[in-house]
Each structure stands twice: as structure tokens, then as C-alpha cells.
Length: 171
Length: 100
Image 1 (tube, rainbow over the protein chains, first blue to last red):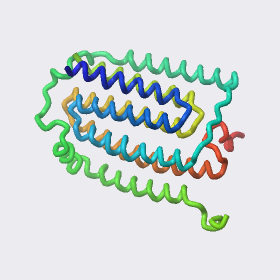
Image 2: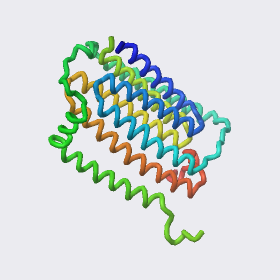
Image 3: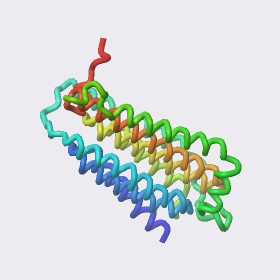
Image 4: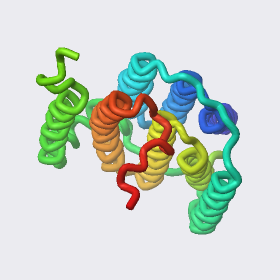
């Protein structure tokens, strides 16, 4: 059962990720990315990371992707298809080659991970909101507070970058 | 049955797909989505290791990565709005102002 769910979610995540990178239309790419994130949330549930799975759905698939779609529709980008030059195709091929080498070197590092995940005993409350929250508010309190400052700085930065300057507001 | 390696390989595949997208796409918004996909692949790897080692510290790291990704999305999309206002385009080939 667990294996079947892993294959369903894993296959779905890979297919929707491929749909995203091969798409030229931003809205379709964004919807494919939402699908990828939802499948990843399912994988997090399989890994007993319940809080992270919910956060993935609410924050990533919900908030961040809505922000993406909002900006895509706000900008109303026209499609410029056009053929790529030979130079660009060569560069893209080289890029893919580098990524392929990266993938091979990553996979060749995976040794000793062949044991079954289900055979690892975990605590009863592993990955629940209570357990992760307790860790977050005791051991990792300082990083948590710094993250709130980071989010505040991001809000201020986004407002300053996106708003028009006062002197050219009349145009 | 599902082993740690299954999750690691899946994470590597998703990361590589994201990296291919960064190299092949010319639309800045889609490149940005590919970067988000790469962040997600790393999150999956961290959660898998966290389960394997029976240690919840990884969940806290993923929480922090999600917070940073949210901040990054807000600032990055504001930069794209600002760029689009100046150039009427989000194609990365149009932005060569730093070229010598």
C-alpha cells in the first residue's frame, strides 16, 4: 500500500514537473507547479511529516502560487514564441548536459540508504504540530524570531520595489 | 517497499528537472517557478532524512525554508513588476543592462 502510494505521488510529481518546465505559458506552468506541490504534500504524509504536509498545501500551493498567478495576470504578458537561435540551442544543450552530470553524481552518492523506512521506529507523535511546535519554540526559538524579522523585511522590500515613485505617479 | 534511496532519487529527479527548466526557459516567471521546484526537491530530501534518522530537526529546517521561500517570492515578484514597468517584458534575454 505504501509502495503504491509512493509511486502514485512520485510519478504525479515528476510528470507535472515535466509539464511545467516544457510549458511556454506562465499560467499553465503555475498550475502544473500547484499539482507538483500537492503531490509532494502527499509524499510528506507518507513520511509522517503531517505539519509540513499541511504547510506545503497552505503556504506553497495556496499563498505563494496565488501570488504567482496574481502577478502573471497583472502583467498580462503577451506570448512571443519565435524560434530560438542556434547559439541558444547549443547553450541549452550544454546546460542540460551539466544537469545530467549533476544528476548522475547525485545518484552515485546514494549508498547505504537501502534500508526500509518503515523499519525505522519513530515516536508516536512524530511530525505532529505539537511535537514540531515544541521544538520550534524551545530549541529553535531564535531562528524562528529571526524568520519573522525576515518576513517583515520582505514585506517592506516588496512594497518599496513594486510601488511607483511619488514624482512620476502623475504619468 | 519504500526505502530512503527511493525518496533521495525522487528528490534528485525533481531537482534536475527544475535545473533543466532554469537553463531552457526564457520567461523569468517560469524560471522563478523552477527555482521553487528545486527548493521543494531539497525539502523532500530533508524530510526523508528526518524520517530515516527519527529526528524532527529536519522539519524545523523545512519550516524555515518555506518561510524564506515565501519572502523570496514576495520580493522576486516585486522585482519582476518593477522590471516589467521599465522594459515591458519578462524575457530574460531582454535584460542585458549589466553586460559590459
